[in-house]
Length: 134
Image 1 (cartoon, one colour):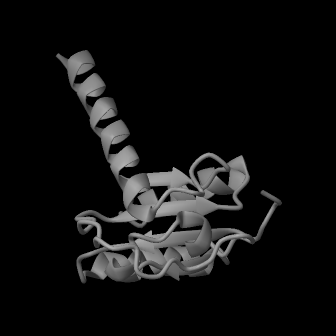
Image 2 (cartoon, helix red, strand yellow):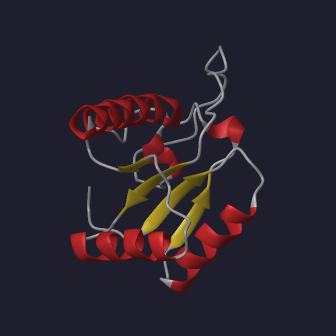
Image 3 (cartoon, helix red, strand yellow):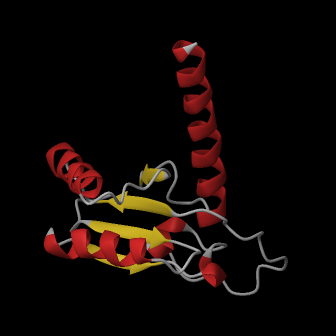
């Protein structure tokens, strides 16, 4: 994948003030936002990010289950800009628990598949923290 302008695929199933706050942080930082709608969660993240070689997939049969949580997929960030974004979201009290960086390994996954992977990793991390806190 060639270097690209920073982009965030942003999904939030709830209509809340947090959406406005997250988007304002992204806009202030000059980051492009691609809102992901519920009817797009079966699409490959490479397509959603606008990568070459990916096209919208029509009629894949069964509609995947809804994604019940807010999620961000980040593309085109170097480490310092990624750190800055995370810092700005924390400062605005708008952190997003489920985040992923778009990679060559996951760009062929559906948004739903990526959600399931991030959710599982997040749960393992939280269990690890709980064990260490006891």
